[in-house]
Image (cartoon, rainbow, N blue to C red; front, side):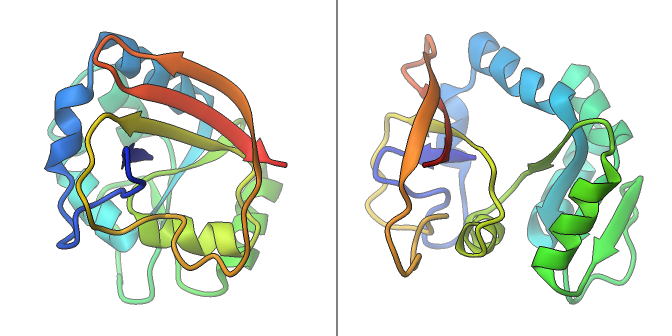
Length: 175
């Protein structure tokens, strides 16, 4: 997930265009490593509907991973998934994640997208590792994947990488 310096993944209206100016070759390579390790790409409905048309019309190593690897879409409203291979999960989030992990699709369950799904996964204690890119911009308000936790979430920093753009890549695990 890409976040602003003040901890937001999207602006209050859900937009996130402010993050793209900090992408570069080095941060792209960092992202590609995570994509290569993924066995399944998991996302909520909104992310699926935004990412599908973009990646389906794109080429290159990121597009290949996004288009060819299985996708798990968490939605209570989506009836069918055109951008596949994809499976829709509409029931209990914890049970769905447990099922995906048990399948062992030769890699990690890599969650993409917005702060709402991330917030739900975090609250349920289902995140084994956070891969965050913090970009040097403060947007003042928005939606955070760490809002409304109920209690402090302590994390251990496993890796930090500074990119040429000034963004920071961080890998953190629950303490």
